[in-house]
Each structure stands twice: as structure tokens, then as C-alpha cells.
Amino acid sequence: MPELCLLRPDHAPALLAFERENRAYFAASVPDRGDDFFARFDERLRALLAEQEAGERYFHVVAGGDGEVLGRVNLVDVADGGAALGYRVAEHAAGQGLATWAVREVCVLAAERYGLSVLRAAAALDNPASRTVLTRTGFTVTGETRLPHSGRPGLTYRRAL
Figure 1 (tube, rainbow, N blue to C red):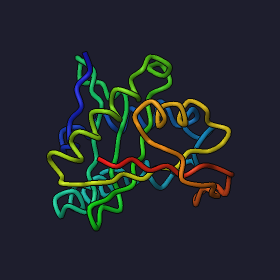
Figure 2: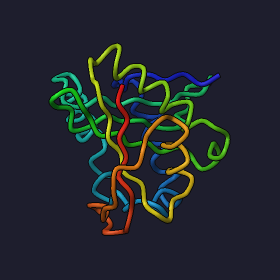
Figure 3: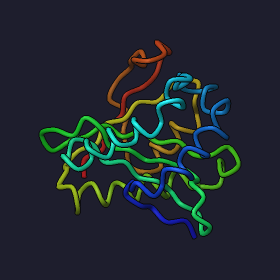
Figure 4: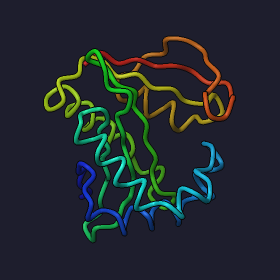
């Protein structure tokens, strides 16, 4: 059974492997992180952990029994009782309900541990898997949008906690 963990420094090797191994897979549906992300990974991770420590963002990994990172679920732009949700799952773990499980778990954490009352999300129109995860986990469509990093058409979602 996978485990949802708040990001820690010791996740670095497995997280970097996850990002490298799934780079092309992720780039098919979200903008590529770029070579600089990988070249400066340790520096970027330290910055993320500092933002997490300050309560500005919460980064989670979905870890397999062997410590392998199977996915990420993040809460960003934390303010005024709300946050934006983002997630990604490894290609070999996709389609098995892992993202749905992890998003449900993060919704509980968001309310009970982080004191949030609402989550926002967005998904591209051409990403039915992501839209299904949001619908299955209680998010409702609030409108249409152009996704900020790609300009692709998408839908915005909201879930009260």
C-alpha cells in the first residue's frame, strides 16, 4: 500500500528519479520543467522545503513500499483558508486509482492538519484522466480557463472542505 508523506529532504534521490523517469510522460500533458530544473534540483528542493516550512505550500510524495516515488500531490498558493491543488503520477502507476486515492488523502490533510476550507484546481480539456480524478474526489467545475503555463483550454474546479 502506498503512503502519502509530506516532502522531506531524504526524499530527494527518489523524487529526482521520479521526475527524470517520467519527464517525457509528464511533458505530454503539462509544460516540461526544463533542463535547469534537473541541473539545479537540490537548490530547488531546498527552496521548496523552506516554502513548506513557512506554511506557504505543502508538497507531498506518494511513496511505494520500497521508497520509490509514485506520485506527487501539492498544495500551493496557500492563503485565506484556501490553496491550489496539483498532482502527477508516474506513468507505470497511472490508471490504477492512485491519483484519486492521493487527492482524497490530501483533502483530509488540507482540512484537518493545514486548516484549509477550500481547494482549487484546473485541468486541461484534453486531459480526461485528471478531470476524472477531480470529479471523483468531490471537485466541481467552476468555469473555463486557459492554463497559465501552456495556454491550453481547461476547466477550473473547486472543492469546499
